[in-house]
Length: 523
Image 1 (cartoon, rainbow, N blue to C red):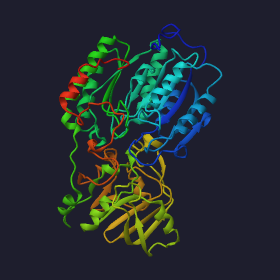
Image 2: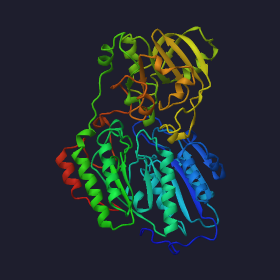
Image 3: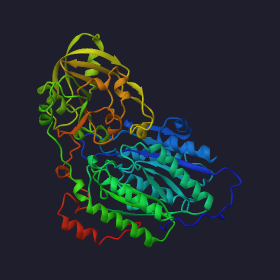
Image 4: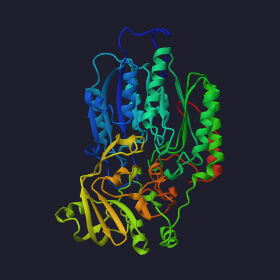
C-alpha cells in the first residue's frame, strides 16, 4: 500500500467546521518469557465518550485531550485498552479491541487519527499489534490518505509497518518517562501543523543491530544519552525534520524487531532520512559496549554496610522489575537482608494472599506469615516470618510527582489494592494486593512509611525508579537476584528475534548482516 499523499485542501486554508480527530489507545508492554498470560480481565477498557473523562488525569491521553481543547478540535473517542506490563496477551484481547474499534467508529468522516500506543505489545499469535492496527486503519474506506499521528513509549520495538502505515509517531525522549504527557501534546501540535499547512510527513526507520536490557536504556547514561543528543543536533540542523526518535526497545518482547531502533519523521527527501538513520546506527555501534550490563551481588554489597553507613542505600533489583512485567514478589533481596542485619530496611512485595490472611489481625499483633516467592518458578520460594502487623490500608494513593514514570501508565492516581505493613526485626515490608511499579514515593507515604528513615531500601525496577529515589538516596547498587527480567539476555529462549544481534552474536556476524540492510520505510 502506498504512503498517504497530500491532503485535499490548499495550504493555509481553514475548515468551515471543527476538525474531527478520532483517538484510539492501545497500551501494553509484553514480556514473552513470563509463565502467565495477560488476560482480557487485566485490561482497563474505556470506550466512546468515557475516554473524554481522562481529561485532567495527567496521562498521555490527557495530554492529547488538552491539546485538542487548545486547537478547538472535535474529539471522536473510539476505544482505549491499557494494562500493566505482563505476560503474552491473550488473542481474545485483540479480538475484543478490534470489535470495539469497529463498533465505535463514527458513521461520519474524520479529518485525522491520533493514537496513544506503547509499541511493544504481542499476543499469542501476533507479534506486531500496533502495526496490525495501523494497517487495518489504512484499509478502511476513506482513511487511505488520512493523517495518522500519535505517540509511542521509548521502549517500543519499532517495526516496518509502524513506519509504512503511519505519518508521525513520536516517542518519549526520557527514561524515566517524565515526558509522556508532554510528548502527547507535542505530537498533537505536529498534527495541527500538518492540518494547517497541508503537509503530511513520512516516516523512515532502521534497526541498530543491538539489543539493550532495560537497565541500559536510561537516558541519563550511555548509549541513550549520546544518541538522543545526536538526534537533537540533527533536528536543529535540518528544518525538514519533524522528529528523530531514539527507541530503546523492549528486550523481553520476543519479536523480530526487538531492540534499539531509530525513526525519522520528515517532509524532506528520502535520501536525507537515510543519511540521518545511517549516522545514528553508526553511532550506536560505536557505543555498543554500553549494551552490556554488569550487576553486583547483594550479599557482597550488604556485607560492606555498617551501622554507621548513611542511608538510604538503594538496592535496585531489575530481575523483578514490575515495570517490565515481573510479578514483584521475588524474595532475593529479602533473603539477603535477613542474612545481613542492617540498621533498618524496607522491602515491597506483591502478596495478595498474605494481605488477605492479615485481615483478621490487629495492628500491634505478632503474626506468623509466609511472604512472596510465588510468582516466578526460579525464585527460592516464600519466606516464613514472625512479624508485627504495623498497619493496613486501602492502597489508593495520589502521585507526589505528576511527571512520574507511573503517570505515563495510568495518570496521577493509583490503586495498589488492600495493603498491609509488617516488620520482622530490622526489616519493614509493605505488602500490596496489586503489582505497583516503585516509581513514586507516594506509594510508601500513603501507607505511613517515610522512605528517608531507612538505611537500606530494596526497589524492584530497572531505571524508572530513579526520578523518585535518586534525590533521597546516598548510594545505589544494581544487584543480581533470581527473576524473569534477566539482565543477561543470552539466558532467554528467543524464538522470533531477528539474528544475528549484539551482544547475543558475534560482532562480525552482526556487522555483515546490517551493512547490507537499507534504511527505509519497510526494511
